[in-house]
Image 1: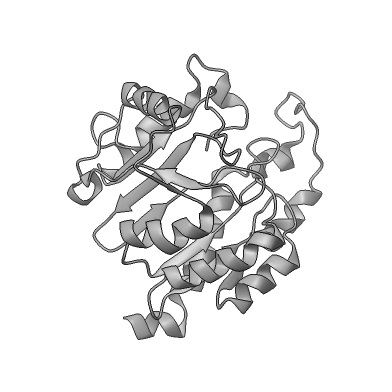
Image 2: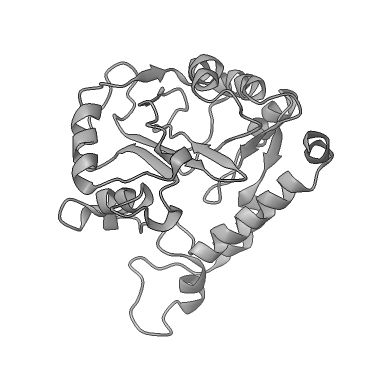
Length: 262
């Protein structure tokens, strides 16, 4: 977990060190070289004049013995911003991924030139680029994070493309965000496209009633209930995300379609 605001307080920011660690560091790090961080994120990312999106690239590829996970980042407030990135090196399949702060700095320079191997608006990326790069997708999730709700004018196309991205028997989801109440219309649009909804906000809504002071008061018992749940103003402690992931894994694993695919 990277605390909100802490990424710009260290020399060079904490993002480069965290991303290098995720991407393998010098020795494979916590994912044993099986997580490729195709990343460029920092304080000085430029804005793409085409659609107002950030030059940021933050895509992760994990390749394990039993499961593959691909995470593609979209950055922007409208949901219309493009997806972008570079081709995989293939290191994750071999357990050979290594990533340094210096390599990340080179990626930032390249991203700020808008020099990508692939880039496309969200619906085109879901319909063309991502199926080409990752042809064996079974389950797919779309989540807005803290970037606001998905606009109605794009949600229909996004979920229709997400449904096509998954293989026969696979599942697609609108994953609601914990920090704000998602519009019911978005969940309905997802369901109309043949996708499902995982409402993380509903699961965590009672946490929002905890008293909040900013900045947090000092002392071992000051605001202690909220400190047990929240890392900062908007992000939860790791145990909350772990429990949300447990719930999501149960949704994925305990279903008729899972048995059909098996």
